[in-house]
Length: 150
Image (cartoon, rainbow, N blue to C red):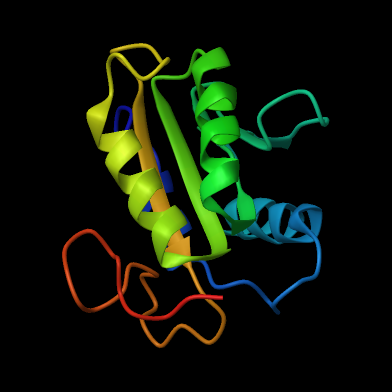
């Protein structure tokens, strides 16, 4: 992705949290450290404050991590993503209900007309506690809807 640089999407898919944290911020820090350890020195990985994207990679890829996503939080997430100007936004979701996951996948596939730029690609990646699938997308179908949830 991006001119032969590291495949950030692939790294986020492969990431397994050190443990199942009680706070979203600890998941963010774990993921940021994993990315720093698994990308070259030329890759900048920065964590942001509360008003900005959670993790920024090379000033091009935004990562907005969510913990315990619910259907009511999906609207707020879509509003957040609509304010960002990244061509790629990755959304790792650490624990979610089936309803919230299905809504997120549907909304991110719709693209234009949902409040974010037509050029923005949003990639949801599901993470579950004790996920036996190291890619985090589930084994049942190509959309990663799997059968486990929190």
